[in-house]
Length: 307
Image 1 (cartoon, rainbow, N blue to C red):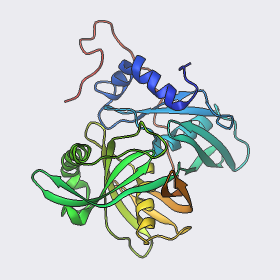
Image 2 (image 1 turned 45 degrees about the vertical axis):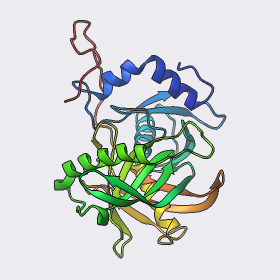
Image 3 (image 1 turned 180 degrees about the horizontal axis):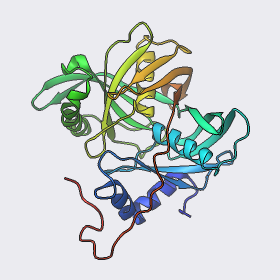
């Protein structure tokens, strides 16, 4: 058991006492910089069935949509969460708050999981940010659990194609560094959330099928392989705030790999004094293996390494 009355308590306890486990699992040779892990804990709310603490090679994200989809899928398909019928509602406790998920099931396999993210909001719009080697760009700051800097590809002159992955990584890490140097952010109801941790590059428009694309960078130069659940929610939040996406209209977000999440704004709300929205994201996950990790006491790199 990880001590703590809330998931944020558990996150902080694990961070302060077991960070070596994060390092071992998210760095080479057992993991890599592009891995995101989700630690399963007991629930902390009356409605929750389990809790998740998220971690990557650099930090402990407050929320991760695709990891939540993966955890629900894994627990149902391995029989650790009983499921009878075509749908199974699961409340997952996270450091950002409870997340409602609905697993869609066919022949004992989870075909998709719908997640209703915690309320999200635009914190600042059309902010100037100076990036060394690039110059001044205009960005928006959106919060979905944690803070995102949203950058239109028009600002940087890069197409959202796999070949530009290294350029997105390099530029993304520079933008995160400069955003934390030049911008001041603070969640209106969670005072400890005060840093920009993610940058999302997005195409400024959608095609006539409601399809858009993105590239999300965070952690230790991590380029998300998925469309990013929280990143998709951030994009929908931004589009809605600019009057470009109505409540209930489906939107399909595509990663550099071509994988897609479906999303929609389901309603409006308030987060402290700020206008916010609720967003539903639908995606799928697949079990790739069951792993047993070993730490040899003679290992010269007991906490792993990054190159």
